[in-house]
Image 1 (cartoon, rainbow, N blue to C red):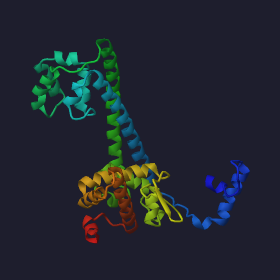
Image 2 (image 1 turned 30 degrees about the vertical axis):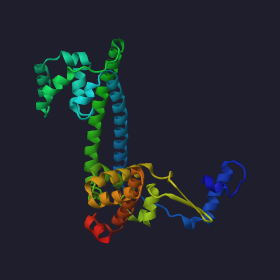
Image 3 (image 1 turned 90 degrees about the horizontal axis):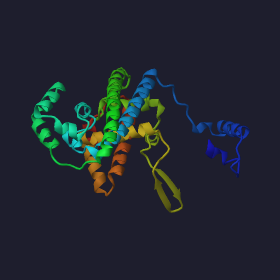
Image 4 (image 1 turned 90 degrees about the vertical axis):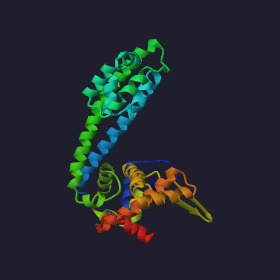
Length: 312
């Protein structure tokens, strides 16, 4: 709407009366350029709200994990080496029981075995190596700051544990809602995880008439670039204006499909051979996925990798 104002003014002036005139003229002269979106189903709206809430909690989890990792690097670096990920339940339980290097080093081998047995740790054979790691010399924060680091870590652990529980609950709710969505069979056939497939379903909806051409999906997802032509000059820009939630879902689909789909892996490899950076290669793959999914929701067909390979 702001761009339309420039047809009627030379300055940056603005008023509600002029805006009303601009809107009225849009309807009078350019109505043929616009198409009303069909009303979305309640199932699509419910799924979209759930998946967006889940994504928001995951982003909060990442922020808290970064804070936790930063604290541990400052005074307790060995704790980051003991387990594969800091957001695992065993990692959080260990930090609660042994929040400082001194308390961990003071624990006997039997104490550690008892702790890991209580937590039903599946890698009991690693207890001896964990015990040895806790007694290895490592960089330490000044003693007068160690108590502060401990306080911060112990404040982050319960928040993270609660957040992880809520993320798991939301994921279960998404699974239930996704299962009964009209387009479940279409989106669940994609080579990606259930959450990503549900996010795509929620953002795109189950009604193919919302997108008359594949370009509608590609521009809405921000995977298609913006091209500016003037005479012999052609400049291609990154598309900023789009549905950011849909763009993130397509990016996740591109990354996950490379691991699960031979066609996607081959396409990504070809993009890298052309000299593109990984981010651009994934974006190009996401753009192809947008065209594929548009065809799927138009025809009601499931994803079939063999059909893609046959068509080249």
